[in-house]
Image (cartoon, rainbow, N blue to C red; front, side):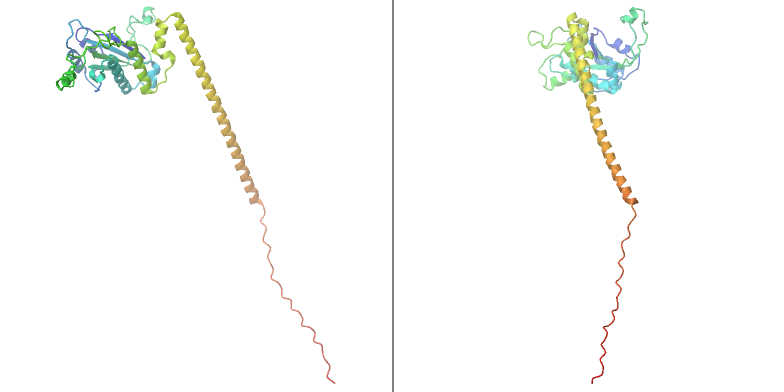
Length: 315
């Protein structure tokens, strides 16, 4: 995730607004609204100024550039990018340490899908690419224009309602060198490092993104600005972490394979038992049925009556 804060100018933001209309007209959004027109953006920023000198910067620009992996993770969804941009602007406001949120700012943003090569690109400097040529791959990013002064209309409304103790609106400069100070004339401050870390963390939390160490802001900063010893130590830490992750994956694969083997064995044994039961059933069905023995009725045997002894005549 790339989050950059750059200065604006002491004049109108109209030139920047018109420039950002080059790919698609309209479709600006703010903390609370979508689908806004450019004609609403310029006066809202230009008129939100108070107690600023003629040469003071009136607005700043923030560029939010998700990586290709991050864009793939959210499906390059504009609605999700708008929600995430609002998270970033809440972090921007909180980072001043003055108890304000994104709704206390005046800011507008626009999503762009394309980028072109500039003279600052190494590929242009080496002659590999032409200046102005479109860059390949996912190039979706967000431009934010934010006023240097807090939302004046809200400040005045709260002041009139007796909800605001401050007499003057806040002047918010991310270019200040003061960082979360509690002493001296300037209270609070702006720490860009903390702002970028918080923005990165917001993406991971909102979209459940598992960020690799090599994708973090801290890793990139160390590789660009750290000492040789710090760069080497960071790379070794990444190698060890990756080795540990791969070992955990292999262990998980082994456990999964063992569970599958146990399940397959159980299924095999169950299948064998069912087959045996079916075979027994078939054998029983094939056995000849034995007819039950019929009990014949007992024949009545007529017994001859006992022979009557004939008696002779009585003498």
